[in-house]
Amino acid sequence: MPEQIVVTEQRMVDQEALERWLPEAMARVHKAAGEAAGTVEQPYLLRNHVADEPVFIVIYEGNPNEGETAVDCCTPLHAGGTAPDGVATRMIPAHREAYVRVQKQTVQSGKIGDVYVGIENWIEGQGLEVAAAPRETYWTDFFSAAADDEVFDVAFPVR
Image (tube, rainbow, N blue to C red; front, side):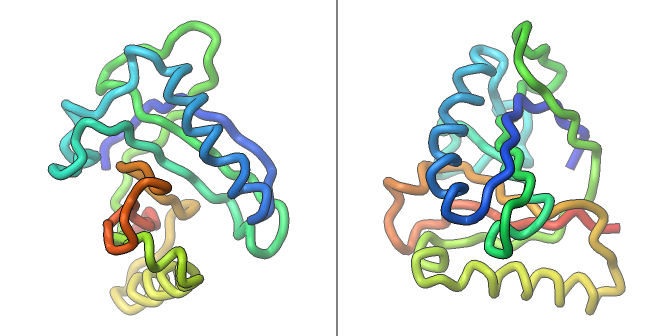
C-alpha cells in the first residue's frame, strides 16, 4: 500500500461504544473530506462490484473487546489531494499488508476474532512480523449488505 493521507476521527472506545460510534464517524469523516475524498485513482482501494461507494479505514490500536482502546475512523483522500482546511488528517505510511476478505455473516456469527487470529498465525508462519496496528477497510455499507456479501478486509501491516 502506498502512503495515504486520510481524514480521520479518533475515539477511545470499547466494543459496545465502537458499534454506536463507528457508523456516525464514517459519515462525519466522509462529509469532512468533501470533494477531496476519493479512491478512483487508487486501484488498491477499489472493489469492482462497489467502486462508487466511499472507502473507510478503521485502525485499531488495541482490542475493543478487551476494554477501551484508541480507534481511528478514516476516509482516504484522492492521491495527491489536499484536505479541506480545519479537518483532522493522518498520514498512513506506505506498507505491505496481509489481509482477509470478510463476509457480513462472519461478523454476525461472532467469529470476527477468529479472522484476526488466523491472519496473525499466517503472518508468523510466513516468517513475517506485524509492523503496525490492525485495520479494517470497508468499501460498502455494512448495514445494508446481505449476509454473504464481502463487506471489508481485515489487514495487518507486515514486514
